Amino acid sequence: MYYNLTAIILKRRVFKEDDLLVTVYSKEKGKLVLLARGAKKVLSKLAGHLEPVSLSYLNMVDGRAIDQLIGAEMIQCFSAIKNDLDKLAAAGWLLNLLDQMTLENHADSRIFQLTQKFLTFLEKESKNYDIVKISAGFKLLHLLGLNPAGKAEIKFKDEIEFIVKNNIEEICKNKNIIKNLKVIGDILNKETEI
Image (cartoon, rainbow, N blue to C red):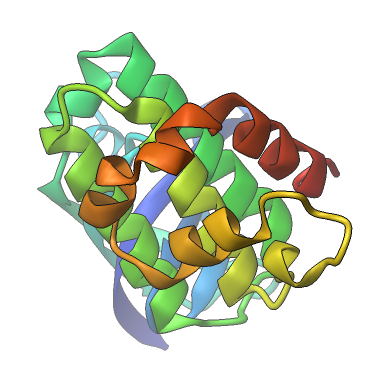
């Protein structure tokens, strides 16, 4: 059976000689691992559309063990992120966290929207990468049901609740969060240790 998805490319890795296993997150199906046959070849029509940190429209067919990609079209490549090492590190961190903390075939449109908004904001942002990264990380944990602000031992409970409840623009203006950014970042790193 054929189906189509709009998905964010999380990562890709080599499988056999010319094939790739591509991990994506879509609004409709959540995280999926897909087989892209021949995508590693120089003249492959799929390769350019399956770059990590991209939003692509994917065409798939059900496979016995793993679904196969038969077509792809990049919707948004986030070139400003890919051309800036600091932005790329922040985006890579969140996409890796998303990959590690989610299960396959468990869709949550809120997580997809958060990731898409994070990448779009990060592409336009000229500074504050750490604040953007930390806010997206806490929001992801909240959407996954791992509410770090609910833990009594956390000293910065109010700041974390503010991060979870507000948009990134307001978070970047909060002086208390900016002042305690290092400590709040350490709390997030402790919460996301896998």
